[in-house]
Structure formats: structure tokens, C-alpha cells
Image (cartoon, rainbow, N blue to C red; front, side, top):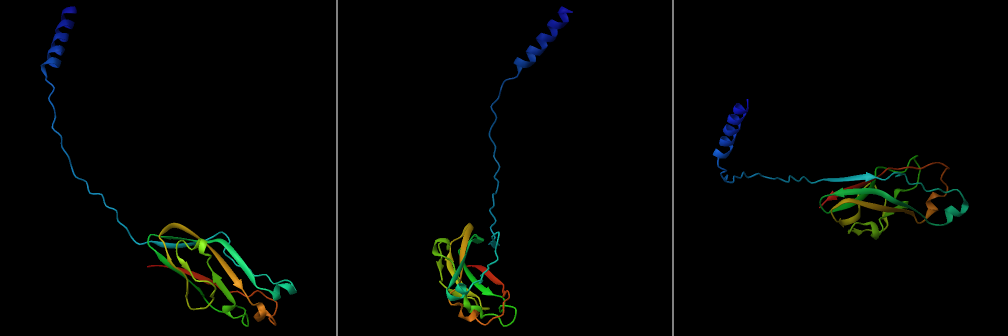
Length: 172
């Protein structure tokens, strides 16, 4: 048994020492890496997008009012863009105030590097609100809605007068 073990050991040793280690030559293979870009832009409204002007006392009708909507909407764009604002129609119910009684402004501090246009009156025609905002992965906008002269609200029936405002971001 010892003799058989010795023979197996010598055979294994001969096999192991009989091979010489040889250096292998290198090889390579090129790989193409692509970055495929598509223009992308989106607007996401904040948590509470509804704007309410409350006129509940006589004093409310005597002074201007501003409703500030912090974090009103967020724009994501891979290129510079412009913002416009438009109302989809007149205030309803019928006989409500003129659209242009409400003006919209984006404070410069939240214009994302763009140039804001102050006191843009609401209209059914899209009007520039911010020009030349920079590309961003999440520009958060604050919007001030102002009724500077509430005189046109006098003689209206007590009701809620509503319109829908649409913000549009367009890449340059």
C-alpha cells in the first residue's frame, strides 16, 4: 500500500513540475458607450395649487390683495426655457370679473436665472412670465397672484368666480 501511494505521489509530482508556467499575451476588445439624449421638459404642480382670494369683510374690498404660492410648480428641463401664463377662459359663473383684474408675477429670486416679467395680467392669450430660465433638474417657482384694484368686484353677487390658469414651459 505504501508502495502504491509512493508511485501515485511521484506521478503527481512529475505532472506538476513537468509544466512550465508561460506568460500569456494580452488581448482587448473595444466597446462603444452611447449617451442618447432627447429633449425633455415638464411642469409639476405643488401640493396645493388652488389660489383663493377671500373677500369676507368691507376692508377686503378697499385694498389690493396678493396671494403668494410658494413652491407653486417645479420645472425640469435639459435646456434653457421660457415660461408663459394664460387663462383657459373667463371667470365663471358668467358676469364675473374681467380676467385682467388678476396679475401674475414670479419673484426674481425664484426665476431660475431667467428674467421675470412683472404684473402679467391674466388673459386667454399666453403672455410671457419668465424669459431665459436655465436648464435644471428641478427649478421650484413661487408665484404671486395680485388683485391691485378690487373695484371691479363691487356689485357682483356673492359666489365663487373661477378660471383655470395654465403655465407652459417652452425650450429655447
